[in-house]
Image 1 (cartoon, rainbow, N blue to C red):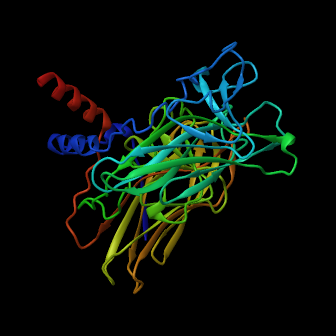
Image 2 (cartoon, rainbow, N blue to C red):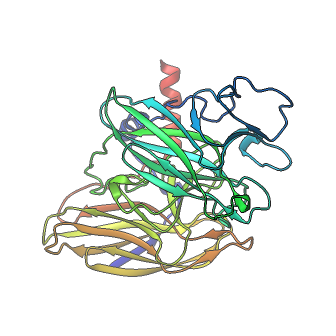
Length: 399
């Protein structure tokens, strides 16, 4: 059984006391400056010559503050042949290159999520080299993805691992050649890093899913104007999108630059057929539940019909979203009963591949996924971020 209804942002209201609660709840997840020289704007200690030279080779007498390195590493300055966020500086990892930094974990056991920017090392590259990014419990392999954004750089997210107080976290970047001919390889350029710590999420009465609103993921950089790309993450507990596994490539989008139906963040499924997100939850066997969710488009000129398969337990249904690319949302739901399996899968998968007229891959937006027991009296309350901001300003004035 399914049901759907149109929604609008203006109708998303909530009680004052609950706003205050969520205000302080989310303040507990603010990012800290864990990394030194995370944007590489502090230059090498013994940098000499013309500072406008786009590439300067580092050596034992010419190191970069906050970082240690091995192999061929160059300090990069934005210019005519090298586009960088904010027209600043970055690091290029060449042949057999590594760069790393160790930082101190903060508080009790926290999950650490990395956001970073990646750019190709030149304008006419025959191939993009890969880069391996490693944390204490996870690693990912990245390369610049063509047709996933209009900028000459892209932001990515990666789950680094779980660490406790007084433990150290080692962050390592390492280049990987993709061809035998090194001269034909475009070595990766790294810029604008941000580490976020997230505590263990607690299940609430108003939603049996953890992170159903996708508010807990990698932090957005000031230059993340086109969202953050999240590549495949097979485990929900080792995913940059907390508690959700990723299939294919999705884009983590923010309300500042995109249409987000609810809250500050949402998910756009961008890599086409079979891409999406999924999680698992333990529910009472034989009980009935209702899965609510919002599907729409991100107001990024992505036009057409999106088909999304929504699966809850053994029930699956396709939903079609007609998009004119200007930002829209529709609330829908699925009712299902839990089968004898130990866990119940919840997933959203794209059945279409879409591109804008500029050739940028895009797709359906998923947001505000809520799971409730039909036998409970749980109250569904939606938070208006504008009221949260007003409350924060009021508290600051009163203090």
